[in-house]
Length: 443
Image (cartoon, helix red, strand yellow):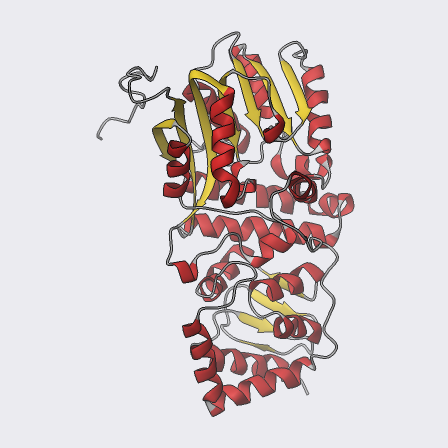
């Protein structure tokens, strides 16, 4: 019989209490759901087993990463239809659902139709034995979060995938953070403009000492030294990034201005610096250690020195709905990553002694950046798979596409916070111009 897809659709509609949002195709060739749009393909019963053993985002991600499930058509369009069903159930990894969620689940299972749907799903999946997670999943971590050793392992998991792989995704700029777009601009132009925006906010000038925390492949260090004459110390925990950055520095003849180190920010002791840039790094710090991070940077700046903290933020939500990073991203992409609301970040910087002078939200810019990265990954798909593995390439595609929708739907934000080391309430001069921003005239 070829009825797996209609049965699966009936189960989904019963449990969701709404029509199936996307078309599905099952392993037996049957199809069900809306006639137009992307198709969610279940290549085997194992995809359903993954969902039964780990309901929600992580089960779906495991099915995708393993190749047991795929998408025909526009991945963004499919995620746009499916994601709201998952977002409603987001919570921190390892936390129990709130009591009302359990009550809702029990009420659902008291419904004879729902119990019948679950039985039918179990019959379709034949769920034993439990499928092993795909090999790209991060190793389980033990001990306290954000020790130096555990942070080093987490950074290696994400960034030591291979410099060639990242070059295909990021393009020549090798910048792995939100770009700063102009209408009609290219990814390369937008990343150059972002680096220049940071340098201008920091008011860099020849001879200034800049500490670039989480320097990646060296792009910020190179721009600051080449265009502004700054003397840059770049630090990263990724040995592959450091080797790549050092090679670029040597090729551009800037070794006298740039020092790239494999070093934890907690071990930097050679201040004071005139300026610090932290671009896309603070997400790895951890909420429990964020104040210590802010105090460390404060202590490394000279009086009046500036910090530019460029960081992803989550929306503030009720406690029972709050999350750090969802289970899929924690398991496959950013182990131990944590996101905080913008207000929390600003508060911690102020408690460390900083005077926060400017906040610029770049949410829409990150959505555009992620879509550009997905486009580059698709364009270089075969080479990306060769350099890593099919599973790893699928992880990055799903992560970037889902993240783009998170920014587009205002579930995620990204902000540049410019702060000054203030010596105390008596310090009157921040060193910033009276009108630090220029806004377009009213049309």
